[in-house]
Image (cartoon, rainbow, N blue to C red):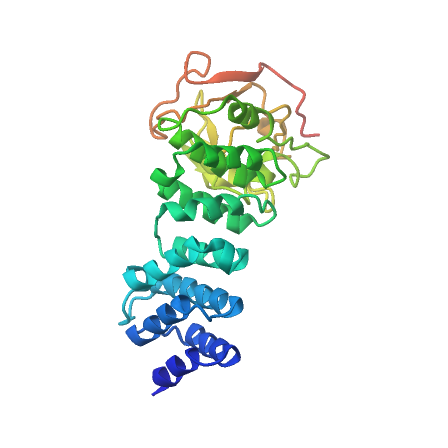
Amino acid sequence: MVVLLITKALADKTSIATLGLKVITNMNIADAKVQQAFVNILKNEQSEEEILTQTCSTIRKLAVYQKTATDSMDPVVKQNEDLFEAMLKLLAKAKKVGPAVVKAVTLALIDMEKDDKTMTAPMIEMLKDTFDRPLLLKVISAFERAKLQSRNSTVYEALVTLLSSDAGLDVKARAIELVSKLAPFVTMPEKISDAISAQASKHIPLKGEEDKDGVIAFLVSRTKIEITCSEIKQGFPEDFINSKEKKHVWTANKKYSWFMVDFGESFVVKPTHYKIRYASSGNYCCFRSWVLQGSNTKPAIDPCATATDPETDGTWITLKKHTDDESLDAD
């Protein structure tokens, strides 16, 4: 009875239909009758812009809900070919229905995990919205999934603009990933390479004594940082960069022991300064000889294996070497 009333509401005036969409969204109703009502709205030449936009927004939410719902008996929204066809026809009438509807339709298709060449133009247009981080990440991921539609120079031009914009560093990193994955299929314009090297970077200053500044503090909330080490005796590897709780952590007392900080594939770090914290329990806690190294490839390291001499390991570049350095003092 409830579904019948809702489907009737969807066929009524805008205000009543809007109420029906809200009920559907809140109750996660997506049975065959409701989905057919969506199709009817999208195909109706008299449907207003507001109701078209809200219908697509509801479809998006139901598509996302059905990805995670385990007890839903409703037909899967993203498998409804009639709905897919009706949405594509709206995109074909982009100038007539307006940009708000086009954007809503495209986002609904993305969440339905659909791929069609008519989606390319509106997705490129969305890349210009450099202040909407979630939207940019969603569109880039959709382009990455739909490789066939991404293999054209227009997409690359949009990525150049994005890399040269004020978009966040994580967004630029994802854009660079897309460029690199699609590079075998499309010749990368020279200006994209220039944008990657010149624009997709950020200087992170190191200030004062606290660890709230610096590259690790900047990246820890933006990506997954993996910490590994040789045989550990105190604490956990992740304590090595824990600037809030400042826990004790150290390896076994063995030659060539190490900690490794992996920033992942999305970021490249070029250090200019670094800080080391040590305990104040006496000079036996102070470093005297150590090496700071970096690598652009993740070496295959077995934490249980015997550590090697860092000076002879060709996978690492020595950035700073200290020998019998007594500048660290517990007093």
